[in-house]
Length: 371
Length: 100
Image 1 (tube, rainbow over the protein chains, first blue to last red):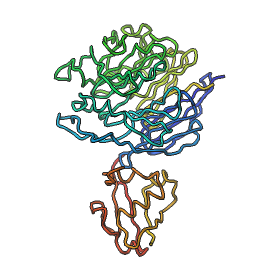
Image 2: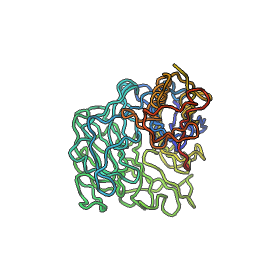
Image 3: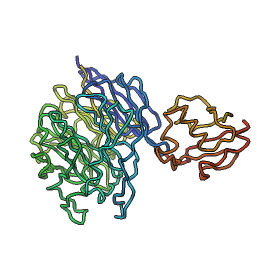
Image 4: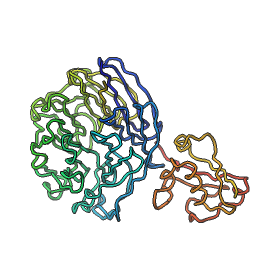
């Protein structure tokens, strides 16, 4: 029977949750790196026991941890993230120039076919890569040095590169997203990038359909259909059918189209999940009801999934990297809250249950389906 | 050569797998930079956690104390106080106090 491993990053450490394919009985292991913020933990598709964790603190900076045994033991590896060349400036919140400064790794995306190759999305926004299992990191500078880079501004969480999607059939094609610059695509393995934000509208910008400046919160695609990408933007849920050439809004009947994570069902490329959040000021669910919204039509028509989720007095948030799916059938869906609970559905979202409660605030959730 | 006793904050001791204080070997008239160089040489995992990579600037929320003095804003080539060199004091790396 298949096994499931859920990798949870929190404000005060990492946790590894495991269960068999029934997904009924969960073992909780952790905290790893207790007391440190763990922005992301992710596993290699090529070797699921190879994990990478982003461990950081405001005091001691960035540490990268690697596991070769599925999270049982960990080894610190390289933590030197140095921008290529003279980094220059981006815009600060008030529009003044601000030097590019590395703060932390937000997201690790291991390459599909080699466990030693990993991409790291960092704050201030840049893309780094290791080819030696995390021992050393080098920037792919073409993204940050794009002509628009000097105009990028941080979102509320900082100027962070938080999403990296690699087309599994053509690994030279990648999408990344930066808050608050927007979405970008490379077709040549990161040698060059271009903004793909046409169709986005952001009224908080002087030019609401500007080429860059949009606060994209998360991107998701189905690996068999990489030209169709879904986006949870600051406000608005968006979809492109042509690899980002044009986005159209698919918020439809959502109670709020503000939110952070977005995920795609493992076997139904048009089934999409978001978690509606009240507003950019009120980072909690509308009406104190924690609901996952599911569209089976690739957007526009959404149903609110509530069974097993708190439906009163719930004022948690679900952050951008805190939702994931497994590959079983029926598909499992998982998300973690800033209240420290991780919820799972073993039936595609119809019913939910907390698989662990009272952790520190959850920053990220990734799911591995193991043989 | 002489030895300097260094005290680290708890989360860095955990990271480096250290119990208690650390003793590092340095030249007879060591500077702050010498002590930190020796510490990072012995425990490479600490590189980047006390001082930034490349610039070797002290991270903003890390402080250096010795002999009841705050050495945090002294230049890196500042000599370590005599009592610490003589083994009568500890060079302390301290995380600035804040909430959270």
